[in-house]
Length: 210
Length: 210
DNA sequence: AAATACATACATACTAGTTGGTATGTCAAG
DNA sequence: CTTGACATACCAACTAGTATGTATGTATTT
Image (cartoon, rainbow over all chains, first blue to last red; front, side, top):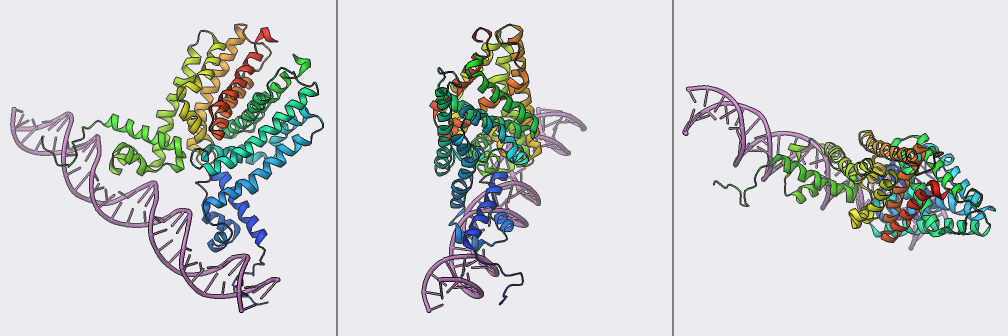
């Protein structure tokens, strides 16, 4: 085995390398925001050099977009969209998605908030490429939630006089707001207190409670 | 009149100069975040130099803290805390505070969001000095809202079985969430849609609607 | 009331460190 | 042996912060 480097030879695997860069960039953005992300930190966390980084991504912006498309979008898909779409009971599917939130990555959720919302609040006014990508995720999130509410109406679970579009928007706003409030206090209790408000609201929509 | 400068002589007024710096810094932070704020832009927007800036504020962090204390806190006071505290009708005071939001600075609210929430989401995990200042504003905002709910209970306006603390937390989370969603879409309709969800929720708390 | 002394309120010029980006070299795989 | 996958070395621009100079207001002294 020829060994030109002092360190152990790195096996080449471009897809794994790319994934490692994306993972490190995601965490950097999650903690510090996109503007606060330092490519130097992405390098040190992956053990790669600037050459490798710029081989896979042409610039910082492209890397940022890729984090949205290849990391954040799949997360939202697996945390909310898929479970809610596949739930047998539409209302229970929504409630479960909400109640499961604190269990996913509790410490990260409270310390750093929601990766999607963080980037929206930072970048929406500054970079329309970010904004359109992020709002597309938001729209699909809204769409899934709205359809679940419509199904819950059809199933006779919640009142038929509610506006599902308005209600879905309100629910997602509340979810993001709750995570944001918990981040402000850096406190899990505030998250749970706040999420109870959402489930309480959902219960107020049920027919038997009217 | 001796005139050493080429430009017109600047009259000296330290308090006005300080306010001008704070105003420019606030807008810079509002648009770009604290990390994105450039002191050079604060200088160019005020027409001042770095010497003047560093005369009034010892460093960037001190300026950032002053923006929180001297700009954002008074804004929250005048937009929400004072009107809600001084309202004759506690429930109407809350509803009015919510419904008035889009009228304050509509284009800024939708484009840049909420100055308080922006800074919380950006800085809470990064700088505890920011976080404690911002969360103190949040706490006073929560406190005012909770007391208004308690007064509404006392006045027989809303059901007495609700948890005012939990409800206040939920309402403020929803407000911030709605502003955040509108910012994502850069769309006033989504803000109004979402805020209707909040007022609808408040109505669901009233006694006659139970 | 004029002169002096001193602190405040700025301006100018510079520095050190950071950061995104590039040019080029090298090793490995097909 | 050509192309892809990296490493090394370097640069130009930016940015917070500093050192220092100067003009202005104000209190004190005589």
